[in-house]
Image 1 (cartoon, helix red, strand yellow):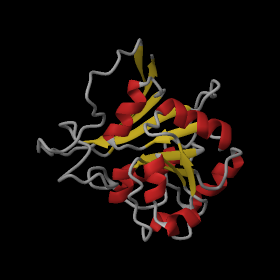
Image 2 (tube, rainbow, N blue to C red):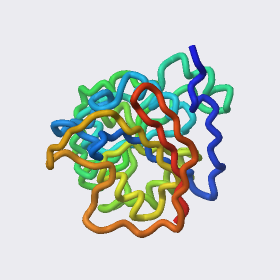
Image 3 (spheres, helix red, strand yellow):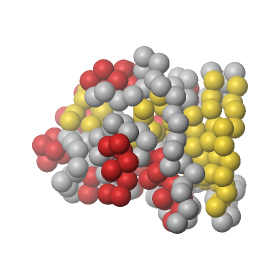
Length: 238
């Protein structure tokens, strides 16, 4: 078995806040959903799924929005075989799962809340905290950040309270937009899948109401090919 090209990932040290990266897979026509679904495997191959796990294995925490976790309600962790490598790098065996939800409308029966390897952190609003089902509150750490928790407050909380130095964001598109809009994304991992979707209702990687601020520079750090998929990694300097 060949060594994965992301097995030895050299991430920059944090600068008084978490280093933040996005990881997404998209079709050739730029869609990250197919028939409205944002599930792992809906666009990418099994190797892309392995790549997602390999990328996760280098981060302290993995973050996703409420819509994403409602469609794919699983702990944002890594397979058992990657735990030893994390420990060797001084990380916890499993990354911390961080969920963003304004509404608090999460399913207490979701696998993410059934004996998670670590208590998930739920960042929500005052109203959302009230709406969270009691069974979720019993297994998760609930953090309330006002009515519009933005990337700066989220990163500060994770940095100061949960010791997150490297944060991986896995969508959805509106969450990706917020982090880019506030210039909090340092790198993007992007899989280009040999698929065509075409539907106008399906989503793209970053979606929001306004044009994003222009980055000073976006550099291609690496390009890898496996089968008919391309795996790109970019550095963003705002």
